[in-house]
Length: 263
Length: 202
Image 1 (cartoon, chains in turn orange, green):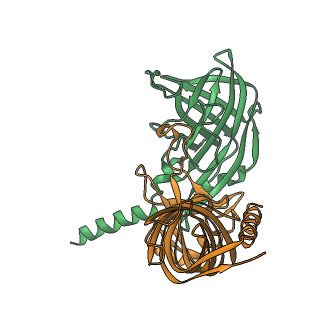
Image 2: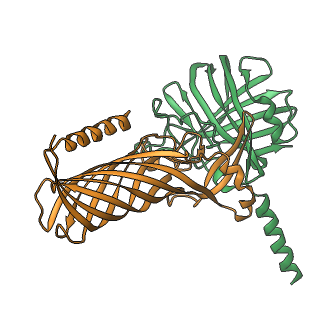
Image 3: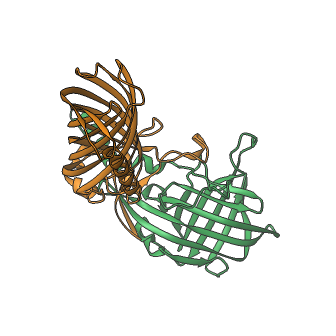
């Protein structure tokens, strides 16, 4: 639903742009790279035995002290058209790698946690696990809209609205056990771990600063966020809630064009 | 040299049989509503608690919360903890033990208790006896008026493919005459590990 609203908004902006009486365009090639971290939830199907009594922290605190970490790093190439020095549209291709990790995060007990690997009403099998890591590679198509509120100068601020559709290339889940000799039972753990969906989409906003002259190479750095996955539960072993990160763009002008369009 | 080798082998074999230390500890996670009692759980947290009228009988870190004693053709479940919650204003420690004895039930090894999974014991029945000890007063007579003890779940636990223990989880409630005085034990719950170390047969 959120995705649909964003797409309608992007389309409306696009139509508005096409109806401008005169368009002055500047074309760029952008190399972008960055990292986005995600606040996340542990999925319900992972059952982990708690080991920290509540009186250490009070009743409101989590008792198992196992945390999920999730971040995405990416590198891509985009073509951008800047219209009337204010509106930038870009489309490109991006390789990204998502790393998700579940690990113990307290000093009050051992450095591993007890994960349930199988369960019946009268039996439960645990394995001691130090951490679980999932690495997924994607190729994606980002579409971004940038708005520059002020006319060209050396430093320009901008805001951004963007979406990215991605295809999963490969994923690998790795388990580090409390007892290394248990590594032959890795599949007992990974069978309970979700793999990412083949297709996913990310919506994100952002704001930043661009440094450089209009017709010369420039660089922009931006805070990218908030970022949401369109589907909460399709991203592998952790469920991302919201993300934020940093993106750097190196922008190379590839020619300019002034054109008159009469409606 | 040979003697040292025997020592090393003995220590190593002891370690390989020993219970996982994390499963021996108590992990007290309080109930969000009945905040004096542990929350009901089935993780083997080695806790129990029950209201004793308005007082609390609750497990602690000092005592072994459960011992199962099999002797003289009867089996006793001995719950040891303290009277009163452990809060900063509660200076005095009152050890308290509640024991439930079943006659004509004689398990051979601790894992035999798995048969009690999802079973209810009527505490008013003739083959069941409840006793209480508070401070230094042992075997306070308890005449149960009405109540039951429910072993909701008993599970055999393995850690890293090795048998670890049984986890006994459930609820209990009863009314009784304790030294002739009517007392209600309410909202009792337990989540306790049982292995060779706390199973006694003689």
